[in-house]
Length: 312
Ligand code: CP
Image (cartoon, rainbow, N blue to C red; front, side, top):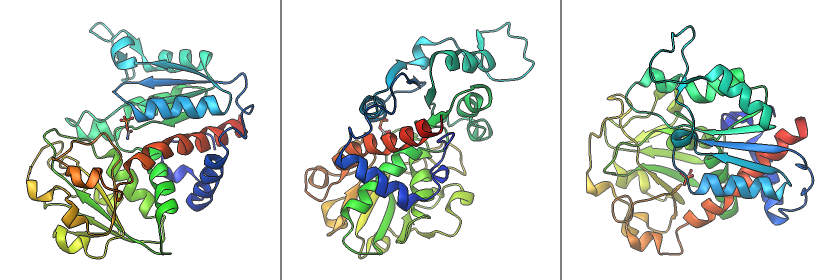
């Protein structure tokens, strides 16, 4: 694998999940594969899980790790070609990406959607800027549109917890006071389309995700109906895609409760707002898989780094 920008960069999801579970059983089995190799983590946005799990995975492989909060510490980047740079932006992506390539063997990028300009967000200026101008492999630690490391961790968690060959998995929208990006939901949908499962998406009208991503998926606007006989319920807020970045509803009836969850397992990528997105009784129950999902972030990224290192 050269880059990891999307869940579809894994040739075979099922094989990747099996390999990640084997890595989890013995995380130090490849502790020299990354000797004398450096991964540089560039954060344009905040993180807890992605930052710590990526550092841990890289260290498990014997790599050196450099981390920079680019959003607050780096020069403001220009992405347009041919711009006269006489305003606020000090450095062009062309130089920045090539310079980072002098100091690292792999670069991992987190750069969220701004949720103001759909076209600009979908152009993935930061991620694609690094992919176009860096001379080293690029890993997506959550971009404007996707979060494939989270989706792989979620696939590992589903595999470890499923009790039937073809489980019913529901992706349910939940209310949130802030406008959130679509990346986690998008990558979860892309990952579920590669699974042998009954997959249902439920959300209020107006919260349809990008139809190119959800093409072929079952979408139900009645949450109660969607949740019937679910084995896994993945809860996530996202802002409107059609009214780009808008909050159209804060309807508390969409919050996940123990009663609505029934016997299903609860999943969320975290961070999560208690008693807004999901009630305490769910998170504090043994039906919640959120800590397992967070733990599996290490093995998700370890699998990705290993596969890239093998091709360096
Ligand atoms: N789920 C996730 O990516 O967590 P962080 O934003 O804390 O990295």
